[in-house]
Image 1 (cartoon, rainbow over the protein chains, first blue to last red):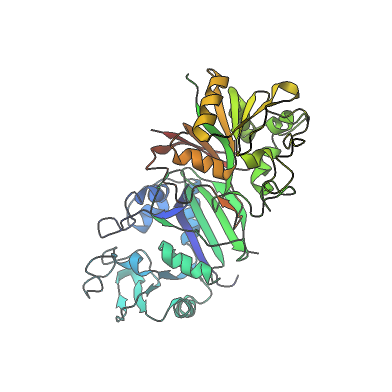
Image 2: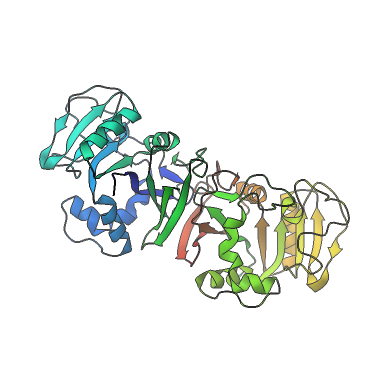
Length: 215
Length: 215
C-alpha cells in the first residue's frame, strides 16, 4: 500500500453543505454546523481522540476509527486551525484543541501568514505553509512517509484540492439534516469528470457513508 | 388524514443532481440519469407498475410501494410528459408510457401549449394546465379528493413548487452515484428557511431514503 492523500469522514448535509453559515470563534463549524458532526461526537473514536471515556461502538465508530488510522500527516485549512475573524495569527493562538491536540503527527496549516512551527504535547507539530496547496502536500508527503495524509478541511480547502485533482480518496458522511445555507462542498465541482466514482456505500447509525476514489 | 401534496421517491445523486445533462428523446432522464433510478427499477413496485412480474421485495420496495399508495392525482412538468426537444406538442404524442400509462388517476401536466385532455386506458387522464403551478395544484386537489397529490417531477418543476412553499412532504432517495453535471435539485433553495426538516432516514438496498416535511 502506497501513501494516499485522503479526505475521511467529512460530513455533509442532505442539501450538500459541509459547514453552516456565519463561521466565527463561537461557531467554528458555522451556525448549525455541529449537526453535521453529531454522528462523530457519539463515537468511541471521537471520545478517545479527545481523552474521554466511553462512546458508542458500531458502524459509525468503526468507520471513524478506520478514518483515523494509518495517518502520518494532516493538512488543514486556515479556518480549521483558527477563527475566521478573531485573534489568530496572534502568536498566542495555538489552535482549537488546547495543549495536546488530537493529531499526534505533523500538521500542515495553509495560511498567508508565515509563522514558526509550534511543537505541542503528544507529538503534534503545527507547520504553517504559505506557498500553496501543492507545497503543503509535498511537505506532508515527506513527513508522512508510507502512511497516509489526511485532509481535515474545511470546505474551501477541500474544494481547492479536489479541483486540482490531488485527492486520492474521499469519504463523505451524509447526515440526514438540512442546513439550508452555509458552505457547499461540491457546487460547481464535477467529481465525475475529475475521475471519481462511488465504490462503496455503508449505512451507519447516524450517517450514510459514501466512499469515492479515482478510477 | 387530510390530502397531502408530496414528492415521493425522487432520486438524487451524492452530488445532488436529480437528472443528468443533455436530456432529449433518447435520454429523458439525461445522460447517466438512469443511474439515479436503478434502486426503483429493481423493485417489485416498479415492475408491477409497468405490468412486469417479479422484482425485489425489501426496504426499497416497501418505500416505493408506500410512495405509490393513496395517490388521487399526479402533477408532472412538461418534460416528464414529453421530450424537451422533440415532436411534442404534436397531437400524436401521448406521453412516454404507451396506451396504458401507470398512473390510473388524473394527471396534470404543466405546459405553455393548450391541449384537450387525453383519456388513456386504465384510468389515466392527461390534463394540460397552462396557467401555472398554483392552478395545477388546485385542479389536482379537486380531482384527488381526500387522497394525496404526488408531484412526479422533473427537477425544475419540483424546484418551482418548493420555492413557492407548496409541497407538504418530500421524500428523496439518495443514490450512491456521482453525476457530476445535470439538473441540481436543491441549489440555491434553502429548505430549512422554508420550514422543512428531516424527520426520518432509512437505508434501503440501493438508496438512502430521507423524509422531509414542514415543521
